[in-house]
Image (cartoon, rainbow, N blue to C red; front, side, top):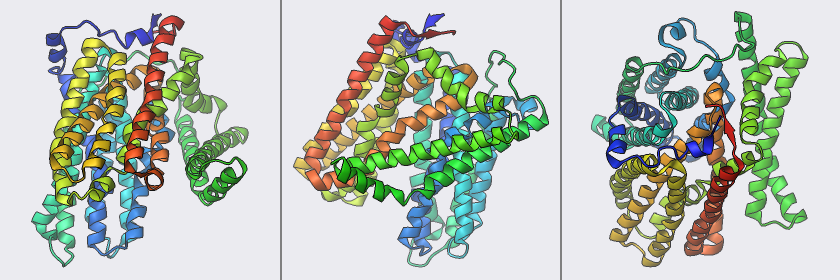
Length: 526
């Protein structure tokens, strides 16, 4: 037995040369290309597809509905156990558990992009929506596998390096799918008043070809060497079919429940506002949280129904969804709540601000070209630099210290937006603000991914990390949805001060978690 939280800082004391040499290891470099493969699909659903749809004269409200195609990224923990436990016929025997699922998800991504390329939204909007949903599901599945592969292919002290390489590749992939795809569309003839379906078709076919970078990487890497897992309840073809049935029921109950009560949110918000005398924004946030909790409960009840009917053994339900959660609480005991609070709130400062950042830039008088060029050039460069710096510092000084530094910088740089709000359309100051904001985000991101990686148990890697990463953005995104209303109520300057203050509880949580575990001795088998 050894202290896991102390292991977070196991790298402390390594020299700078040793830390830099870690970046040159092939398994670390590999994460850049896998990150590139992961970053490519996302913008092909969001901004790039949105411009294609508007170019095809699809109305604005319908265009925004397409963002739901990416909901798989938020709820990927539902089918993460499939990736963790289900072997693929032929492929698993040939490539191994992680590489087989990685290849399948990448081929599905390519297939979805090609499907979109051969679908003209001006003629077949429903088919385009189905293709976009497939792309979102496939991209989220690839994320599940890459996260599991990253955690399992290197020791814990290298996780910050692996994370920084992954983030760098992810950002470059997003740049290619965003600015790169738009430039390609213009080059193929999309610029002008007349809609050109062929220009967008060739653009998306080009993106499908670019995805071969991920396929080539998958075929060239080695399967992670992991200890034998204890035999579970899945042994025969019938057991695996029951496992698939369980997943389909859980996913169906969750999705249907989540969307079926969408109309209840305004009513619950009104009740909370009147009965509990809560602010409207806080009441709306609580209503959304109850909606999510309702969907989780209904999904669990659906799974229990299958068990009661005898269609799925109780052992399958327990090993799939309950054991990974129970394992986490058994390993961390009372400290588990502290850890979950830290996961859920760590990125609250930058996500809440980021939701309204582009609107703020426009309101300050910056042109779209200035916003795009500065955020793309300085934003990307500083994010990559921050990620690499975060990896080096984490290996040199330990993850927990850099986790604290990242949270401090993320909250502190929000105060620079306050200065920008007072200065107006000051381009040099905008460059400084975006550079500082992205540098701190890259540093904090690398440390936080390494931190989350250290929380997982090797037997449940895919499910636990998918659950942690979903929790990581849940509260900030829900709160961020009200950022426009908060700005309307208090103005930009007070809003930016508020986002900086939101980071203070995170600093306290990091301090308490590190101190409590140091004295409390939470541990598990290595």
